[in-house]
Length: 130
Image: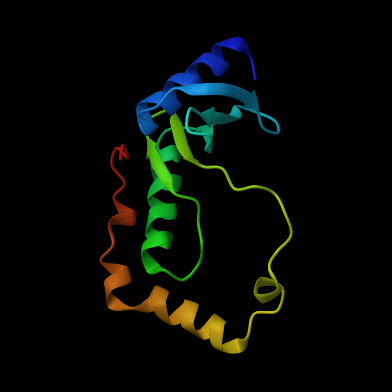
């Protein structure tokens, strides 16, 4: 991540969280950064891969969160260039995630197929500032 992207990531974090980033550091390759907020929480700022990419990812994550079937990081917001979401610490899957029961898979599929899921606005992403 170059210094211009570093500065842009810091600004995106401030826009979408309402707080200043005390520390911003690269995460993996490309324009992805982890930022430490003043209250100690970590968030991720990701530059979109092209037009509409941040809106699609942000809206899709919010749609999944609304189903209540799978845990996803909280989306703080997005704009045309950046998506900001909670950082998820690396680690192994839980015991339940390693061996999900047939019942848990059925519940996830059923929740995604409910009529209310089809009415969610994920197909029409808009600006995502929280």
